[in-house]
Amino acid sequence: MAETLLVEFGMGTSLRRGDYTQAAERAVRDALWHNSINLAELFGFEKSAMQITVDVGVQQPDRVDTDTIKAVFPYGNVNVRVSKGGLDVARPVGQEGEGHPTIMANVALSVGFNMEQADG
Image (cartoon, rainbow, N blue to C red; front, side, top):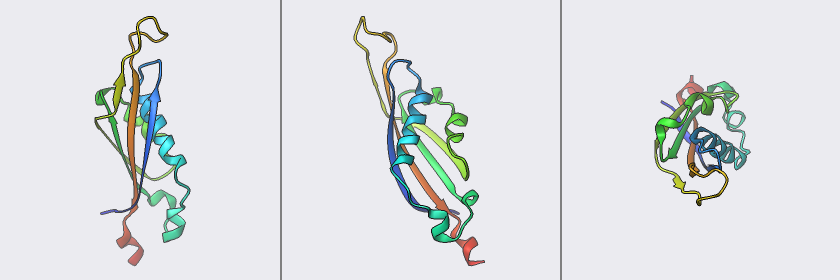
């Protein structure tokens, strides 16, 4: 079982397209930009051993393509869980994108390793 060593948070939006996947992907990238700790090197692991859990909150979870979210990560074992959360903000009548809400996605990104592997 992986021990969680780091949790980072992010927020992303889809302003005009009403794209839940786009908002979630931007939230993941936002979380990644907040962190520059090299956990793998710090604990003597290969980067491929990273256990990454991405919790995404959006108003319509079934409209998030989890494969697109996984593809953001160049290495590691990625598990994406999508649940109801985030925020949909109605666009004013007559504005570009009318009919699509502005979508706000929230993400909690957890990174860990199977620490028992390090002990042999």
